[in-house]
Image (cartoon, rainbow, N blue to C red; front, top):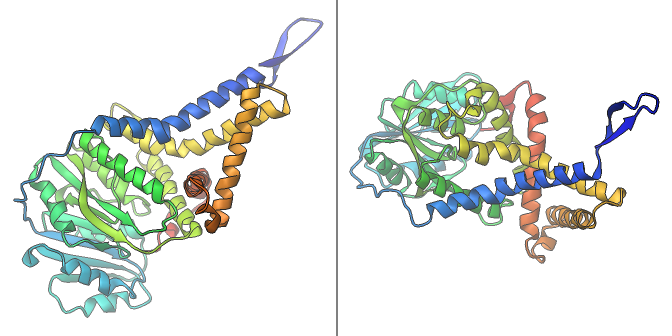
Length: 395
């Protein structure tokens, strides 16, 4: 590191700037962090899980189950959603649906109330309280051994509930997470396929620590009331279940489908919401950062926390290599700066012109990667700047 020297005293003064070696070190550390986050950890988990599988469930569990949906202004699709659930391949006398109408203004409650099926129950809230508080209200009324959490947007495959329930044949299982299947054209399609493979591997290895909010089930007795303004019930609840010593499993053949294609803008907003929720989770549960309290720390840290740091590492790598260009530094570092610049240019173009992306190999993947990391970078200021976290939830 370059330092100024007082010629009269010969004393070294404070560092004035970072030198070439420092920039190389910043670049290497940043690249290693990004490589471990997006390739090293997923690759290690998948490799360790290869050839292994979850113990086969004998299908003997037929406990009564309540499907809980928190809905706000979902009148247009709540009937179809309930029809889909009632058509599940599960004993009708052991299946209930509880819809929490979170202060809707479009008649969602009236649609549910007029359903005419004793298995469907409605809990109406006079004013919006947010998803977390709505789920707390619902769970105070659940009286079945198992609870399945679902959203209004997706549909369950016919066997989804049966497959989730089967997982609880093993008394050590406290939570069973299903698989969310996204429609064709999803901006983050490649990312989601990698994420699904990673969740499958973590489950086999006993490292599972999260679920998709669209489809997961728990033993009702393990539910811990959620903070009222919580954004990520599907991370909070699994981590608390795991902290009790119960296992979390990923049930690959319990599927919920979301056929609607989301454009880049909508996907970007959704990612900011999810990633902002991870910062909120750290503020509410700082014990997650303590390896001696969080038994799933290595997996959670690599899978969740480092993804919040990755965009800053990417920015640091880009700036460090750019320093080599302006200071006539190492040739290899200059070359990597131009390589990064080209990759980012392709990524931006693919987001702005999807037709172009379809013509260039890996352009869509580059755009998805950029979108994910921009959302991660903006998630911290979005969380810090939001006085009402529930504004992120739209039902």
